[in-house]
Image (cartoon, rainbow, N blue to C red):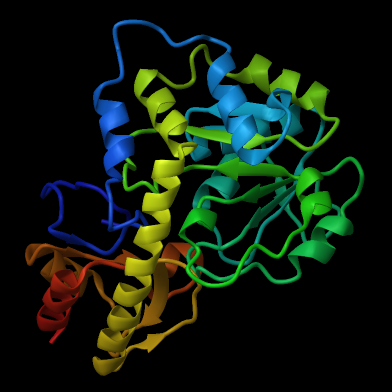
Length: 320
């Protein structure tokens, strides 16, 4: 019971363990997925989709790489680096476990300097904070190093902005997974924007990809992502999430929890009593799931996605 979604007991009524946008699903995106035609394969080159995504980000369509999910892209680019002899990886102190899982499959060594593959995440997970010294980190990389910035939570940033200009962004791989922001995590689809002048890497990643990495529903999700109506809905949802987040932090603090700062729709907290397996099971029996942050290297902490007031009240009563 460490992540969002159904478990052996089914779907939790109040699932704080997921970082998905609790205002979702986005109606336009859901409608697009529902009317997608699953009778035919998509274009294997995703020509129109890549052009739409390129226009959305104002980049050349040749830089767009379609992926089955963030996890699939993580595994694929790690394999690409390994095939070129890379065996050293640099990670943020607390981060998504699939970075290290993919690296472990290829025998990578975790290092602080001289890495062949560098993972960044802004806003970060699980802390939901801007990554410190991101700009100087990217500028200080070796020319042959591969740097990927995971932007899964950039659309759910509630404060501030990404502290990177066009030049450092053009030197990195940008990984985007809109399903969280749209409240449709069950539709698996992602894409990456390659750095400038990395056609050889784009070709290698294409060669390593499975045929049709995403189906008709994934195509529909990503196409909807680029629409102005979808982006307006997302902007409106961020306003609601700001209100819900302020109330949720206040509720947690009223219970004696120590809440860590974050700029997104989730945050970590240190509860007033240890978050044990027994307490987790007791909460789950009442329809509530939290994310134990021990696997992120934060023992004693939980991560909570921001949920509506009714769910917040359910957690308050259950905890007391």
